[in-house]
Image 1 (tube, one colour):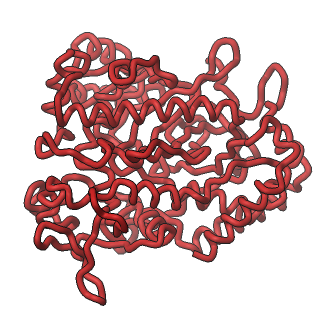
Image 2: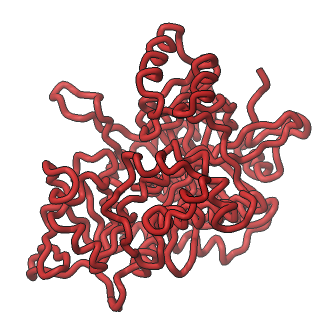
Image 3: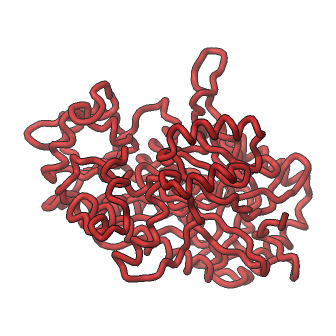
Length: 503
């Protein structure tokens, strides 16, 4: 089998240009020092409480297990030219996806044109008929998008970026991106004086700016809140972190109520009107009067206020139709249909199991493919064919045959690798990248980089933290080689860090 694309090393020329300064620095570091720094990072993360809950993994008391996400000290480095192209592709893709969601809930022109099968949309579990005809500010539905990017090697030794999936409902992980950068600057400040690394610490400011920009019409000083399911949610740290960084209230459903056509939150000074809810709660739990009757996580009557245009939900109700994995294969066609452009970022080739021919191929080649649930997340409910036993394949075959519409399949891409600290020393491990894209009626913004996830188990392609994956800091270099940094850049990094630490 051909070796995967190595982000740091080019077999023909050695260390890639963007890593040369870093590699020279790394070679001068004693192994004992790096081990001590790794232990320090773990201690700080544990002290700060940067953990996540693993559902299904129980401790002696029967409670969900709290785990640290392992943090790797070797950054993933992206040269500026690569990032500029990727960023253009992300903007293009998210713009088209927002156009698609608006179209689905209004004219449905793409369905009438037969480009996306109507049945696949209208009978989809993520389609919300309650959103038909509802206008949202700026026609933007996914204000915060997390687009998963992988890189695979080509026969000529180059690498190509592909979109693995789109996360448009409640994409998570951005807090780890911010904390990883803070940690690297704390442990290795000298690295940021010899590299021009684009800053990411301003993300909470951009997020707040985006949320305020999509407030209901006529609201000049909008009140923004973050809605969390509560402290037992796996991403609760992130919910609290982002609320604190933006300087807004973190609320639960019980803190909100509807009165006179508006949403209010309970405060010690009395009720306060809320204009924008950054919700980290799925559609099903938002309003017990409309969706799940047994939900205690949302606010009764919320959807009526939303449909009347008196509250903005970020992301909008119904965005899930566009991040369903069965819709993913049609995104390149959406880009052509709505924007009249060729896709800059390409999809991984995908087999849609609801199609008879695709299903037959998948059943015949299960040992070669990755098969995923269309609504799955966290790396669960999937089969990685090359890593599965024959018994596991046969068991999954029965599940697939019973409900083919619930699955897609993709070739097993040899994800690119990046040097990573493991028990035996430094070794290549597979990675992906989740950049975050912010959209409002005023435009589309990104912060340079994103969250790099790494599969710490040798040979594993599963990077999800819930299944043993870790994370790395992601550097986008602001110049070609990172040899001569600008003083102002270094100062802005330091300033952003100190502001974050004071918050």
